[in-house]
Amino acid sequence: MGEKGTSTMTTGAQIEALLFVASEPVPFAQLAEVLDIKAAMVEAALAELEAALRPRGIRLQSHAGRVQLTTAPEAAASIERFLGLESTSHLSRPALETLALIAYRQPVTHPEIDAVRGVNSESMLKSLRSKGLINESGRAEGPGRPILYVTAPEFLQHLGLNSISELPPLDEITEDQVHDEMLKG
Image 1 (cartoon, rainbow, N blue to C red):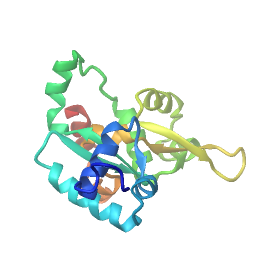
Image 2: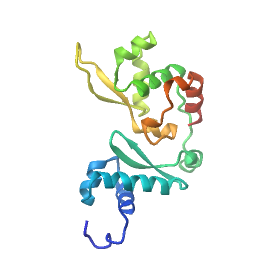
Image 3: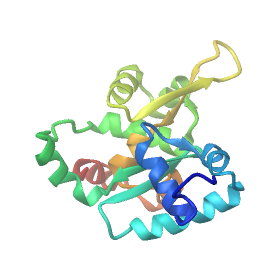
């Protein structure tokens, strides 16, 4: 980077500063480009930064090749009180079912969700989109080119996960465990 003051900073510290000022998740490739380093160095620095942040009040969250700083899930209650927010936005069982289908099968279409659930999921999809838990990620090939749905970074934040790969294997969880976990958030 060669700019004044950065020569004494570690790559992890530089990445932390960039993520701190970013208003949205930053692609790994953009970090590599800005710092003029290889992608592998960015990944190594992110792993070190993640370990350094673990005991602190902020975390790194990676999703779809992008990374951002987030607050630690353990601080949620204090942050809600500080900001004057109430945790009134609980998800119904049908919404949790729809969200779980999207999380484990993403990208997935509305007709695919309906086929698994056996009912129309349009209202659940609208609710999950309005809560920022899912996003549209394009359109599927085929008749009608239905919209593809994926989980949003807010989904990971709500569950206190750093990446979708941290979801437990589907055969190890029950619907009640998912419901209880979402109610805690």
